[in-house]
Image (cartoon, rainbow over all chains, first blue to last red; front, side, top):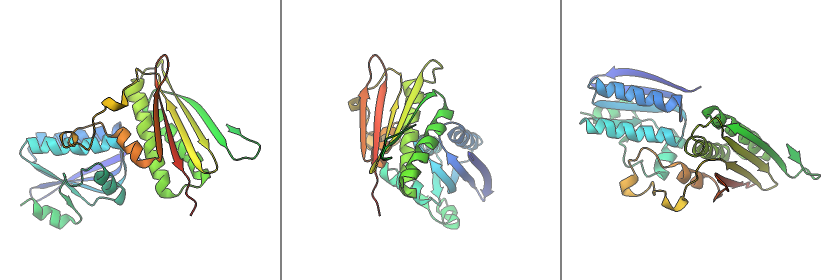
Length: 114
Length: 146
């Protein structure tokens, strides 16, 4: 399975549920397109739910970083929710874990945007 | 596929097209042998990821998706280690000139983490330029029997 993306709105926060593999090719480009689409429509509070992400490569990490900077450049915030151990490990060894605002539970993450 | 008389070493060699499908094929090829060698799930993940990153480098940056260039993948399973060699036919690069992805100025760069992750996930990484063109990376993971 490649990647599955589903966007839902919780108050003024756009929650993007991501499942599957975020790797070079279809997976990373689908994530990039969806994030750009959200930003272009004026969404500035984006919560990326990675709880069902089974695999992410350096290209996928690059898309997370690009999404983060794209949203920030528009005056918004992109936060991460429900990292699997492997994704968390990857963000830690690449020193990105402290760059992102990472949450374990959705309700707390939504509140943190206020 | 080769095997010596004692059955200790098994080697698989393939020449793959410069496509993203080859990245998946190489990952599966290596993981099949790594699984036979007895690596646990965590190590299999690390090996698979290192091979994927190396293949992406070979296909995208080395051969630049050229239909005229191949990626040579060789996997060898020994008693205590798995060795993977991946060679492209591209222009090559200077390892010393690659930016450090952990430097503050580079943290938010979109790319440039591939070789760093390969180093993090494998026990050994060797890179050498090929003549007349190309880059060969050799990845080694030692089997720690538990």
